[in-house]
Amino acid sequence: MLKANIVKEIIACGKNPEYFINKYIKVEHPLRGIIPFKLYDYQTDILKDLLQNRFNIVNKGRQLGLSTLLAAYCTWLMLFYKSKNILVVATKIDVARNIIDKVKIALNNLPEDIFISKVVTNNRHSIELANGSRIKASTTSKDVGRSEAASLLIVDEAAHVDNLEELWTGLKPTMTRGGRCALVSTPNGVGNFFHKTYSSAEAGLNDFKARTINWRVHPEQNDKWFAKETKGFSQKKIDQEYEAKFIASGDTVIEPEDINYLEAMVRPPAERMGMDRNLWIWEYPTTGEDYIISADVARGDGSDCSTLHCLKASSWEVVAEYKGKLPPEIFARLLDEVGRMYNNALMVPENNSFGYTTIQKLVEVGYPNLYVEGNRGRKASLMNSSLSVLTENNNIPGFTTSAKTRPLILSKLEEVIRTRTLKCYSSRFVDELKSFRWIKGKARAQTGMNDDLVISMAIACWMSDATYTVNERARDLNVAMLDAMTISSRNWDDATGTGKDVGPTYSGNSGLHGYSAPGLKIRSTGGEEIDLSWLISTG
Image (cartoon, rainbow, N blue to C red; front, side):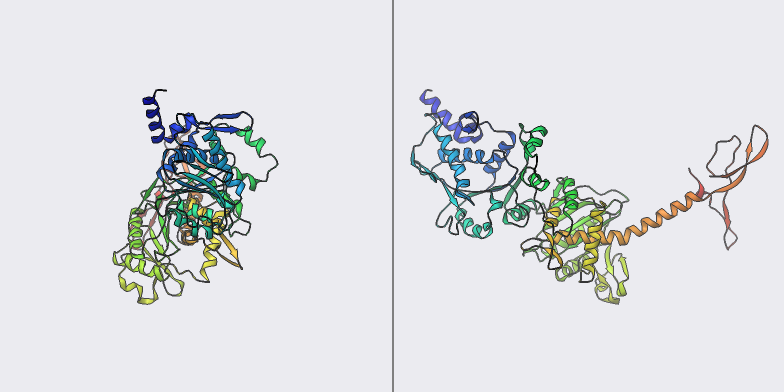
């Protein structure tokens, strides 16, 4: 190429890594040798994530070319930027070196005109260019990353690094000057640092951009390939290694197969609302529907979160959910807005120490349908309550979770999930269920995890069953009684001109000519006749 064209091409490559990778990066194929690397759509999406977000976490299935993509990105970053320091960390040095080896292949196969810097260091664990950029592989030793300033930190197979949470304390400061991070791994159960970080990212509780990719995203992998590849594998191995699912252990409070049932329903919300966009909406309110809003209230600046669920009483369907770290007073405003939005839903906050503050605020703003548990277990929904209701006549606004009520609400939650009654589309809720375990005989979140959504959902299910199911059963009984009501009458037959006893019939049956529906009337104690024919009408 002419010199002017070379300069133009170098500028184009430096500005657009996708262009550079598709045109110039080559990789080693196990059967075909050195071949051009052409990005698939899902790889392009992840490349954009790397460019647009400082912190990225990718939960992936096997054999999807993520290490190749990372190597191509590292090659571009080193070549077109000065003094970039890339650190690749993995539990084994061979795993970390895998990306280094791919960078070497890419550099060795670049056209001379595009290779604008020279290699000055090239050994088993590192490469350094003349422009000061370098890439280094390291194991997860306790002093990894110490005294380094990383432009890009890559933790490969992060879910399999046992002490990553401890290592992260030392690794994160290496990126304080604007460095970026990519945690990439196949899943390895729940409760580890990778799972917790991914779950928090999905919930919007940290700075990571979360993305999951499974075997289906690869255009060359079809059902026939999948069947052959996974032949003889256990379902757990398939779900974890190919479907990229976080698999719960057998000691979860909710059985793994029931969690899988909920996970199959997970879908993104139709809208994310609120100042922190953590209010997830799946369905907007329907006129005439009854809704229940349950809430678990936290302080707003600790490890726990404030949560709410909005449950459609007629279908046991979760239409809205919140999980975030709002102060109790601000959380009350959110509850008030969501409650009024959903037809003045029955509001049932947990009345713990922080919940009391939220309840006070709800009473102050005049929320019209606040649940109150009266003395001796009497329960009532008070309309337009005043602040005095908090202390008068032993009325207790909100739901009291205690050693007595906690097993009851959790038992109800287990029942509605096991019987496939509950409909919930939230990935955040499913993640909490996976780490909600029996620990020393008690149902609780494992260390480092939350159960805020679990408790909120359990309260909603308990209240829906206690408040609305009874009403539904009463309505069903009334319908059954009315359906069973009959009346015996003599109907006129035009053909014969005579009356004919046709036996018990519904009064709406007008199949005969000259038929007149009989009336059904009663006389009140005041002597007034009351027409009740509508009771047996089918019109």
